[in-house]
Image (tube, rainbow, N blue to C red; front, top):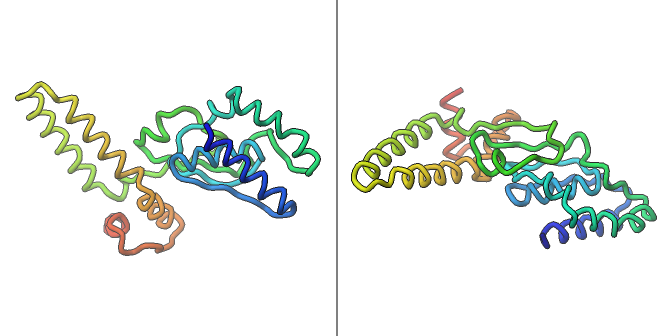
Length: 193
């Protein structure tokens, strides 16, 4: 968990050097888990995109020890900490993603927003489902390896929906912006809406 200790130390330094600043954190995937942990430690606002759940980390003995170690220093600096993430901290989960959907509870779990990649990429869903059925039929029928086809297709689906560019595009569509009108997902979304 050295990445988590490093993230906590880095934010502590930033907060100590800028005591009047409003600081928010954000991250994607592992970075989203780091953002959750740091937000929890320092009561920060922010967002995590398709993060792994981090409640198990903030409940761990390691986290509690880190929190105890920083307690006096942070109180002397007037830095709020340890009461959980700011209520505005949002976890953006990707529907169907095992990264954010199957990895445990999220910090500030009451503030979750789900993004649906396939709402704008229905053709991809149909292609993936057809390819999975075909691969399962062929591999299971000839080699008894239907589960391998399912696992491979699951991995490819996860890679598609976990991609940061897809998440940025979904967020820009949701916000009404056109950040990347050349992306494949954006083009598909425009034809769907």
